Image 1 (tube, rainbow, N blue to C red):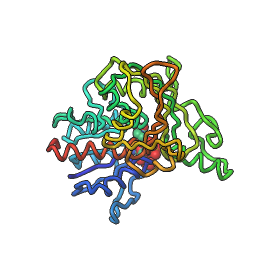
Image 2 (cartoon, rainbow, N blue to C red):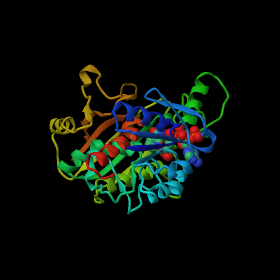
Image 3 (cartoon, rainbow, N blue to C red):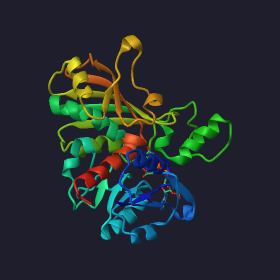
Image 4 (spheres, protein in one colour):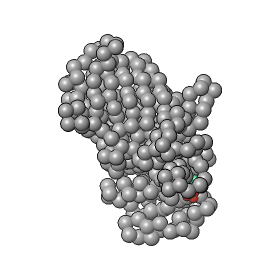
Length: 329
Ligand SMILES: NC(=O)c1ccc[n+]([C@@H]2O[C@H](COP(=O)([O-])OP(=O)(O)OC[C@H]3O[C@@H](n4cnc5c(N)ncnc54)[C@H](OP(=O)(O)O)[C@@H]3O)[C@@H](O)[C@H]2O)c1
């Protein structure tokens, strides 16, 4: 496969290259693409140095697959240009996710929707991916009615500039700010931009994307997204009301049997998921599984995953693998 990685110099791009190499994705030619600022710089992949190229040159190269992690504006403008020359785009931005003509894919859940005609495929939001990985098998069994979620999201979810802000603050250095306030020793109830309804864009992604991925609009999601000073890994407190009742042991069994999900849940040994241990792993970790004692058929749980891996790079590479395995590119 001739593969283009767009946004190769970014937070997601760096992990994308690592995941492609780890999984031995069948690359015959690799194009590393970034903004005008980075053209000519060098990056290495599997020990071989590559020169960063611009988007126009990458389009002309007619890659089989282009994995975009370069922001929504770049995707809106450039993904159609890649698609026009026959390249299949897997896009990590929010640009195409809610477009009814584009598929929003978490491979374990709905990769079977993909066809060779899908030239722009959307990767869901990082917080959404780990949420639906835990909810999908439970929804199938007990049918969700309503989900209330609060997120505790790492600075790596905002990109290179935010990680630098946290590092600077921890070292006592005055530098460029990615957030309107300090993030070190703080919690910002503000991820992405505010919308007219008072929610942030991140919160509305969490409300809408799960319905599209699970192809079901009969349940609702209410979200509060919070940025905290962790370096990598998003955590989520999830309260889910089902139509039917459940047994906690069966919930644990279902989650344990779900590919890509690992249950870490034992209060006796202080066992529960944490971002420092989810770092650099592909699984979605679930713990603190307990009944909400204030309402019927309602469950509480804590869901943690590496936002740069399953939340972005791993999910995108899994989509690419599915396309190759099923001869869709
Ligand atoms: N971070 C996460 O956890 C996460 C998870 C899921 C999805 N995403 C999405 O992935 C995308 C990248 O996020 P990130 O965290 O990796 O951001 P980042 O660290 O700021 O990196 C941005 C990347 O995009 C490139 N870029 C920016 N403007 C460009 C342009 N006009 N043309 C070509 N390339 C351009 C940058 O190249 P230069 O180095 O040349 O500026 C850099 O490689 C965003 O759409 C984000 O929403 C992020």
